[in-house]
Length: 296
Image (cartoon, rainbow, N blue to C red; front, side, top):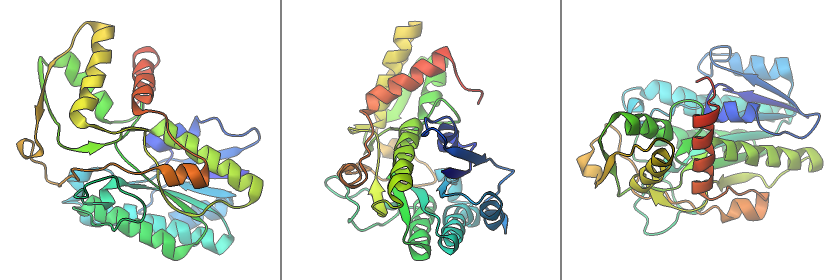
């Protein structure tokens, strides 16, 4: 099986490139700027040149606040790019795996979101990702869309690395405590994609559609930070004083959904994939950052 990963130098792309694929799998990664999803023709050229058996989209414009002022760029990357990839796959009979986000929801539901709940994004990022989902569905039936949340890795920029840096530098930290969701390790997402790819290779198909896939369990950004600082204290003896604040106390250009809790049972039932408890994966990434951090 030949797998083409577009955007191989992001958090997810990096983990896909070092994941444990089945023996004999040929995984080709195209990083930015070698592959630029906003450049006309790059998608068609990449798919034609590499002729994969499976295409995985690891590109995304994930700068949520910047997206509010980078509307055209956000839609070019998050809507037009996936749409072009899905169309290229449809023309060649290639299955397509695409990653989306909890930000397609507005976070007002009193409960856990299922795949059947109506979407209502609050900002440009969520709207562009929702439009990307629709573009994929319209272009090809042979797709798996994985909605995830709060992604982190030992590679790239993310909440864990920011908290560890601030935890070493500052005596006090204020972190939002009224936004609920699930931290998700990019490595766990990658492992799930590898497993789905294996099903496609063996059977020629998968349970096509849209799924939720996040770290197991729910928390808040404040509790997430508290867990990180506990691990920091164990290793360095240093731990900042952590204060819980409300979203209103930390204004940002983009509105965040207060409830990003996703029901992941459908992915387990139909695709056979699930992520470990978020605490276990966070600990694994922190261990890597202290012992053998990637060069990023």
